Image (cartoon, rainbow, N blue to C red; front, side, top):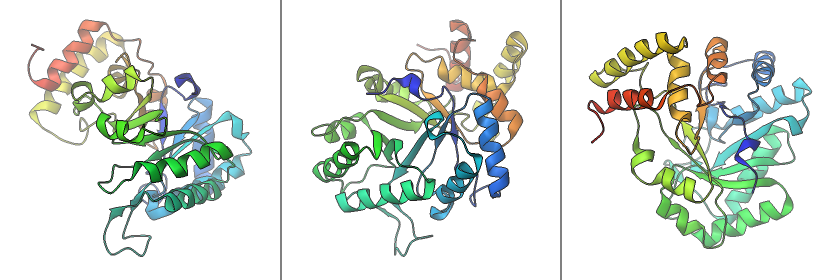
Length: 290
């Protein structure tokens, strides 16, 4: 099992690098990739579905153009969601047959222009998932060296336990932020801590900058006060709050804006005093903890 420190403290999400967002050219994507590395952000999070199954290949071209040594970065990707866009499917569904998992991993390797994936995740749980089928494929990929580690995304502890009959699950990527607190209350982070799994948090800024609600208003007011105290911006404070949790869940940032990436890269979870962490939690809850 690789140490959690194998991955950068903040992970760069690529979902909006391609057609689902900024539609970066190969040149622009290469430049952004190199700028992330300069800031110490070496882990890049993908999924086969991003850009309707096109973003992995676009990133692969940028990675190849960069000339960066493969050992200097970590590549994470996911499989299992079958979209109606980009594929000839009648309905969105999940596919976790052994053959499909193997095929999807090979496709990601080809598109990303790499011989191995550092971490390969099942994107979402499926009610038709057969743990023996999953284990058959994943163990084949591990034994061949095509993936270094296996994990899941958006799985509950009981769904992970189902897989662990024949397979080590080393990571779980879930939604977690100051506006989405479920993982600290539903057992998700208890499970990752107890079993030394890597925890990752997608949408780590939550809805703070996307919605105007009583909750986000309370949080912004608290961020303003604490931002003055610590002399950092709201973006970094939100990630500091997240990383302060003892499980150190790695935030997967989605921005392509350089200044926000720079701000995010400064977060390490050591800034906040404990009472200030609870001030932000209370702002989200709307009341002090019981």
